[in-house]
Length: 131
Image (cartoon, rainbow, N blue to C red; front, side, top):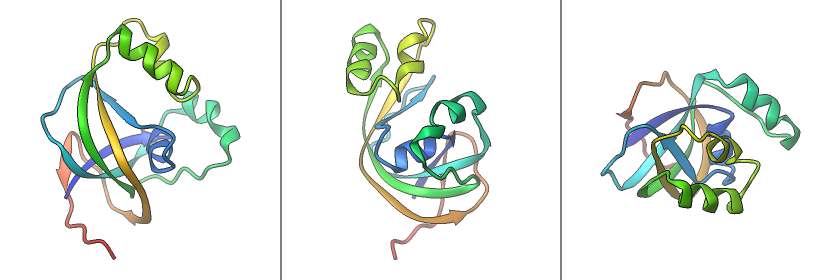
């Protein structure tokens, strides 16, 4: 199955169903199931921002499964939509006027038991079978 590595705290925000878009500078034509891997590096500023949520932020593991259903350009209209959806989670995207990129829309998000494995850049494959 395809996997994407994401820094913490963003991987956990996705696993918890709080973040429904993953942002990249590149677009994808891929639609389908994907595993969410929490990389070993963390965004320290973002970790502080989300520390009050009381969530666990493991690193170096696959922690969720989701479905990429769309890839949308992050333009002003999309930034407004994200700000209305969740100003805390998406504030960095909304405030960054220089951001040019895409949002991979994630649906059917499901937490799974952590699978500790090293991540990779871009999409990568992992032989996942649901237990």
